[in-house]
Amino acid sequence: MKRFLGFVKKEFIHIFRDYRTLIILFGLPAVEILIFGFVVRTDINDAGVAVLDLSKDETTQKITDRIFSSGFFKETDYLLNYNDIDRIFKKGHTRAVIVFEEDFGARLIKEGKAAVSIIADASEPNVATLVSNYASAIIAGFNREMNNTLLSSAPVVQPEVRMYFNPSLKSHFMFVPGVITMVMILICALMTSVTITREKEFGTMEVLLVSPLKPVQIILGKVTPYFLLSFINIITILVLSWFVFGLPVKGSLVLLLLETMLYILMSLTLGILISTVSKTMQQAIFISAIGLLLPTILLSGFIFPIENMPKIYDYVSSILPPRYFIVIIKNIMIKGTGFMYVWKETLVIALMTVLFTVLSIRKFSLRLQ
Amino acid sequence: MPEAVIKVENLVKKFGSFVANDNLTFEVYKGEIFGFLGANGAGKTTALRILSGLLAPTSGKVIVAGFDASRQPEMIKKHIGYMCQRFSLYEDLTVKENIMLYGGIYGMSTALIKQKTAALLERLRFGGYGDRLIAGLPLGLRQKLAFAVAVIHDPEIVFLDEPTGGVDPVTRRQFWEMIYETASRGITVFVTTHYMDEAEYCDRVSVMSEGRIVALDTPGNLKKEYNAKTIEEVFVRIARPALANKQY
Image 1 (spheres, rainbow over the protein chains, first blue to last red):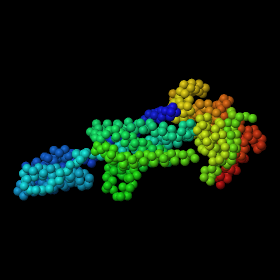
Image 2 (cartoon, chains in turn purple, green; image 1 turned 60 degrees about the horizontal axis):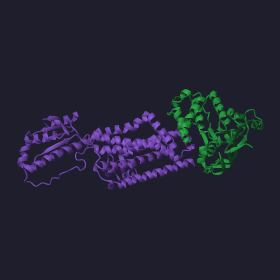
Image 3 (cartoon, rainbow over the protein chains, first blue to last red; image 1 turned 45 degrees about the horizontal axis):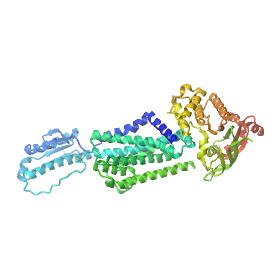
């Protein structure tokens, strides 16, 4: 035990003396959370909208006010005729133009309907879709009120949409769990694989193997510090996302932390496995960074829903551990569900941990034969 | 009859169909400096790994420090020291931290390590270097320190795998003084080297070629037997044909 502790102490010295590793270990997660949280957004905020009001009556004024007071849009220009639309789109600040037909208010009262068009700049399709959806929703809300007060005679089927768990569709809800998932597997696998291959490359591994330390003690000694540091990391991320984005943990914090520990453990064993197949630090970095980063972002369901993927990608994604952890962490953090709802995913990650451990041990002892 | 600390009888090690060690038989006596020579790829490293408990022999009997290499490699590991051809101390740890780490790994008490460290730094005239990072030390000092660390726990045998590679002649000489001093304390030194002048310093040398030991005697007897002036000549005569066969 004393042997082991001395070895762990040495690992900590390695980590704390190498400030670059420390920066990666603690800086990267925080930076990623802030970048993904603030920059990569799928909700809109102050999108530029111009109005072409050919009617200029009380109703169009009301709708316009409602649109701009929503917080999603800001007015960029007030147009006078159709020719202005092309010009203002080319200027680039305007995402959409809302056009009210002539005699809008009068027709609405007389005929019961009036036309409003939303013309969106579709050179950025995602933004265009979002802007038009948000604007339509606001106008639909206005419609509903009109139906209730003025024109209650006409029976109309009106869907009332409610966004459960995330009423205002904040994209932080999607990114914070995703970033935790991505950063943890990346950091843990990367750090462990690099620290083990470093000993191999420098020749110190040979001396350690000849020493009375057992291989399992060497590996555990390497992994223990990273396990502790990653756990501190997770807590930092949770606190950060709570203070900066106001994202609470709805479910049990204890369950979340336990699941996270399992996930960290899985990532560490994956790192050990990577270190047994790579000869140099460069290989280890390459496999962990390139091999894990892109698949995690693209295929784990972090940003793009797995249901929308072609079947083959769905299969590929099912061997990625992050896919399962994202489900777990979203369930606990956002939906507030208990263990009963995530036991299958937990089991998959636990099995993966066992698999990686068994494979690493076999690889490791093969090398010693 | 001197006491044997390493006894090897009919050692065979195969990797698949490749025979790395072909029926080795030899003994190493307590307190002697045993030179283990051979061209690259002759099977030295494999034999060294078996003797240090890192690899299991395919067949044959290997006893090191009284323990069987195929059944008690863990016990062997406790009674030997090892220094490999690549530098084995941690560059981002200080001299004292390195000694503390290896001493701890070999189960020494902290008090004993501290006492040994002080004596060692004194003996190597390393006084001012104790709290310096290894990265800042010149290569010669590092190699000497690595050797001192490899015998910090007073093992019965110390294995040195090409310990003087890339070291300047002056440091090499000092290094060999350390080896003599260690052997005089009763620690057996098992050393592989490519420097034939170093082979002359050994009590006995063995020469390996293609997995077999082709010569084993004192440097003086070998030179007489092959009618050569230096061990280098002996080595070239024995090991050269094997090298040539390997390459063409």
